[in-house]
Length: 356
Picture 1 (cartoon, rainbow, N blue to C red):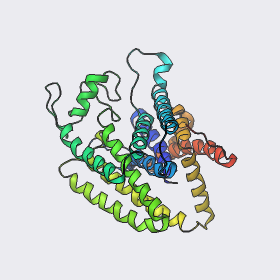
Picture 2 (tube, one colour):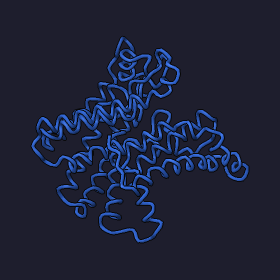
Picture 3 (cartoon, rainbow, N blue to C red):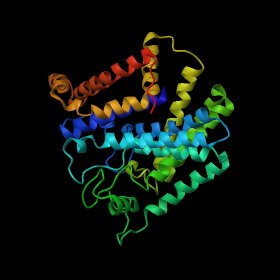
């Protein structure tokens, strides 16, 4: 359910950005990413999915003895996710083949790298070793960002002026999401390290649920989530919350929020049943997105241009004379989500699961 909510959130946030920046539509502020430092609800959805990738690993792998076949399956799934992400990130490039404008990184590439890395660390290492590793990565990533690269000085408060951006420009320009002399990729090379630590936090949360059982784990998850949020906000006083860099404070705060939401959903769904028909429908749609999460995101990437089509903008144009513009902007966004949801719910009803 939480994985489905995260994917649905991603499918809402991306068209909101397309409307805001591509069609000059005034969308609700909570659907737009923070420009640099800070955190909005839009900044939470992708990290929530990344953490849930980690949470699922103890359920999927258990404590089985790894063998060559298991490592092969993990490697092939990682490669499939990265290749699918590379394809979907460059649909615009495939249209007219500009020489240098394809993008190397992206959302599914990051998900694939986090999945593969967390699986390979989960199988041979115990929770103490993995905990020490994730703490080391988050702590050391902070001074790493401040290192001068190529003679340039770092400043975390300025976009593109940090070691992660320097490395991206040095190795991958012009194949970056943010172009120009201060260009970088928000899913770039160095920031993949704390994203892997993010996934390892999810692995630890999954182990808590497996060890304690869903009923007993709820209170522990609330305490752990609250602790991470508190630690993250305290750390943000010196190491800012920056999604584009996946800073340690960003990791802790978003993992804390995700853990608390997971605890709430567990208390609602794992320890009882939604009796109201509307709630049952909400759960069915959410789990439909969660079961076919990658398929839903892939379908969204293929159809990402739809929200700016006149067909979906017509209700916005009609409604903004009666409603505030941000409210009117919700009409094409939610209409697009319903279109994606129609196909995903059809998969759920037929019992079809598209596995990547």
